[in-house]
Amino acid sequence: MNEFIKKKGRKEIFDLKPYVPGKPIEEVKRELGIDDIIKLASNENPIGPSPKGVEAVEKALAQLHFYPDSNCFYLKNRLSEILGYENENLIIGNGSDEVLKLIAETFINQGDEVVFADPSFVEYEFTAKIMGAACIKVNLKDFTHDLEAMLQAITDKTKIVYICNPNNPTGTIVTEQEMDYFMNNVPEDVLVVFDEAYVEYVEAENFASGLKYVDQGKNALVLRTFSKIYGLAALRIGYAITTKEIAQAIERVIEPFNVNMLAQVAALAAIDDHEHVKKSQNLNSEGKQYLYKEFKNLGFDYVPTEANFIFVDTHKDIQFIFNKLLQLGVIIRTGDIFGYPTYMRLTIGTKQENERLINALKAILEE
Ligand SMILES: *Cc1c(COP(=O)(O)O)cnc(C)c1O
Image (tube, rainbow, N blue to C red):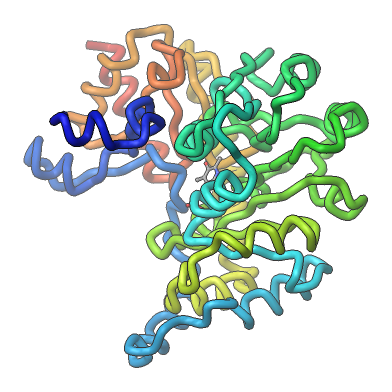
């Protein structure tokens, strides 16, 4: 870092840790010279994008010379219809990551505090820190949010509390009862962000969306994405549902053409692709049961999941397992980055991918 950067760069940027993405397939191909690789590291949809979304993108390609609709009018209309809100309740972003950044830009001043669980999704820390917030991290309890401790962590300086539900990387949910208690006790002037990136995969009966608190007029915001079950991660599109007042405030910081046209048309088509959603849910559900059974056989402990990934304790050094799996063409996410050095987080794949993972693990353990 030279003197210019040291002197003139905002001090917030020096404290940021770069995001560590799941290792891309192409990179593994280059580094190891193997061709047949599966990636179970980034919670992508193993059956691919919604075919209706792909078709819409193909049809729209000839329109690339036009700027996109800066208001995402048609997508907002359809989302409003489906969810029972009005367009004024919605913010569409270049991925829900962008929406998290917009939230931070709208609310956070230097010295404010934000509260979130540890480990949880890293973007809460990243987006809040850029704006100069102090991040108060509350350890998970039994792999799930400790909402009581999170309430205790709130001070006069707290602006935002993030609740990732289901939680990434553990796949756990907070129940409706726990959430009601939290929302009844959280100060009114704290924004509560419910990140529901994996909501479509939830099977538990005692799950409830944070939308009910938006309906009650609380300072709540629910984040959803097209990156996961809809399989549109490459296009970058996600959205928030919140009160009209909060949405209006966030609109002030949004860039005019933040969501590209292909993402808008793909999302609009994918959201009504019920066949693709159903297929993805069924595959996930079956894959989950298969992997639970196999992990038990292997002597691994796992955290029961409500998402499309599983947090698994291999009881071995996970870097060792990661490297061995990589050589066999299987990419997973190591738990050490979350503070769990014997754990892995892996995406539930297709039947073939899951079987390949298990066979690879068996081979490694038998060595
Ligand atoms: C994947 C993920 C997102 C989605 O991010 P996009 O920017 O919409 O791709 C949001 N929150 C969590 C917890 C995630 O795991």
